[in-house]
Image (cartoon, rainbow, N blue to C red; front, side, top):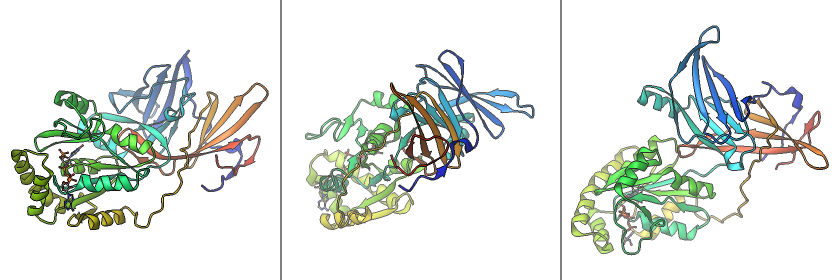
Length: 399
Ligand SMILES: Nc1ncnc2c1ncn2[C@@H]1O[C@H](COP(=O)(O)OP(=O)(O)OP(=O)(O)O)[C@@H](O)[C@H]1O
Ligand SMILES: Nc1nc2c(ncn2[C@@H]2O[C@H](COP(=O)(O)O)[C@@H](O)[C@H]2O)c(=O)[nH]1
């Protein structure tokens, strides 16, 4: 992290962006985006509400019907709203570190796409996360090609670096498979309801069963500071490609159909009928894997060790030495603070009083490198705390 710049708190642009209290426990902020006004309201303990109005020349206008996508945050003791390029940053006062930063996306590519699909005004909530997660790795390929084998080699060699996205499936567990470890084994009607509720990043019907990656499965791995690995079929990879999640896509190809058949039969986990179904589907998957443009890389899994070495090269891991891990940073927002914006920095002035003295500090929240995580998460935030400002301060102490 570089040195903090010199600035004088009184010079901050845009004034404060705090909400105002309508009645005890109810707060509202108005944010103007182009010709629209977004009114974001929060009543203590209830989910946030959003209204928008198309403004005329007199600053008045029609209220518009609006759909809020994603999980709505629960309101605390007031909030601040700051307009960024295509989204509104919401800072919740006195909230826990992992709940204090939220974004209301008003014109992101995802929101624009949803507006087109739904034909109605749409906004989307996402939770802000400090720090970056490395791009997840999507591994696809026909059944029996060796995806699971390669992934478990990677997780055994680099246990602190990678985490597996545990999918949901409606198929029955195999002998050694454990619920919650290999898959979340679930009922079809339960999974269908969760899909409707928007809990899944992607899902597909594969070889006659339903499979899917929940948003939570990916986010749990990223939250643990690990690079997430997804083992999913080509339809699933296509859906992830179209989602807000930036990932690396690798397709694993068998050396021949005969060898694929041998591996599937030798594994001995499927009935004859299922083996035949998987082999039929493999033809189409290999064609799509090679030609669809979904995948960044294709690896041939002939000799296992060779393929594994090639996979490590793609992931930048040949000759890799694991560095020590630092604890993730957490931001604490006190109840009393003011918020201003200078370019890509949100300046939060905090005043907290202890028994003996009042302490003042500034938090500089950097929003220059925001990145979509799985839907509902915005990653790439960074911050620094500068202690005890008065009139001017040359802060150089990273927090
Ligand atoms: N390069 C290889 N050479 C020979 N056998 C292999 C190779 N890679 C994997 N295998 C074996 O092939 C079988 C299938 O591998 P694996 O279960 O990893 O496939 P998969 O792609 O994960 O299949 P599925 O999609 O059905 O889960 C296993 O028995 C595994 O030990
Ligand atoms: N689209 C998705 N495909 C998935 C997911 N989890 C696994 N899979 C794929 O299903 C087949 C069969 O797996 P098996 O364990 O029954 O042998 C295989 O190609 C997997 O990659 C998922 O969440 N979504």
